[in-house]
Image (cartoon, rainbow, N blue to C red; front, side):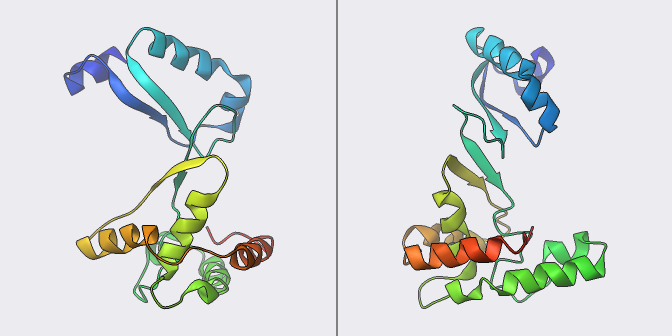
Length: 166
């Protein structure tokens, strides 16, 4: 911690984020004691754990667009070049296609995906991959796009039970 503070030329870190720690580390709980100690010492103001579902923690959702599969881009996605198993990639794409009923006038697939993720209990923020101003505008459009209806949310839940897109 001291080296990080020195490198950053600061006395404290606003948000100390644990990115995908092993589940057994979270279960043992020692990590929370360490984080609370750093917080009480004033070295961090707050901390978070990406995708942890522990009480009193905000959830920071990552990869809300399933590596680009839940967008309207029609272009090559991160999943296309990161997924080494072509059968798995094909299955992921087929699963993603099942969500295209969410696209409507004034709401893109990416906006619907973002609305869904941010509407999940405990999720307070999402890590978005923004590579252009166009992506940024589209992501911000999720704030004003038609909200997901209860019927759409129920359909999403039914489709999700068939397997993840991730």
